[in-house]
Structure formats: structure tokens, C-alpha cells
Amino acid sequence: MYSKKCTKCDSTLTKARIQSSPGTVGVNKTPSSVLNNNHNYSELIPYVCSSCGYVDFYVEEPGKFV
Image 1 (cartoon, one colour):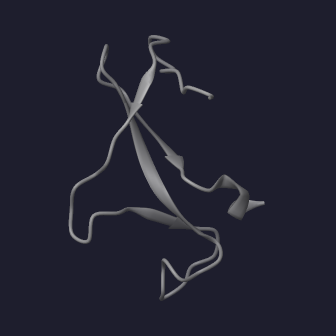
Image 2: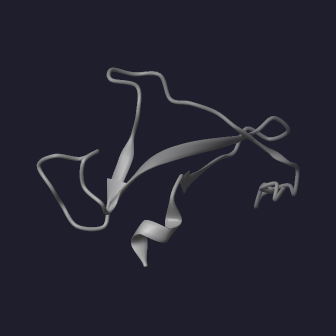
């Protein structure tokens, strides 16, 4: 399994979640009024470095942006 590395200190990043209402953050390749039903939508996941505190974001399904 591929582990993500911190671009600041090269430590391993830990997958995390942003807590809010409704609890997810996402991105769309093309804007839509209905976010999570769009085939170009993917959840945005934060990865946290426990060594330096840096946070990096990755989309859960990058293939939707090809």
C-alpha cells in the first residue's frame, strides 16, 4: 500500500477527517448544483503530519478528473 509522505519533513502522513456539517468536503471538475451526485465529484481527504503539523489534501477518487 502506498503511504503519503509530508512534503515539509518527509514523515508519514495520517489520513484524517474534517468534522463539520454534513461532514465532508469535496471538489468538482465541473461546477454542479448537486455535488455528490456528479460523476466528476470526489471527496477531499486531509492527511496530517504528526511530526510538523503540516496538512495536505488529496481527492479520494483522482481518476474522476482525467
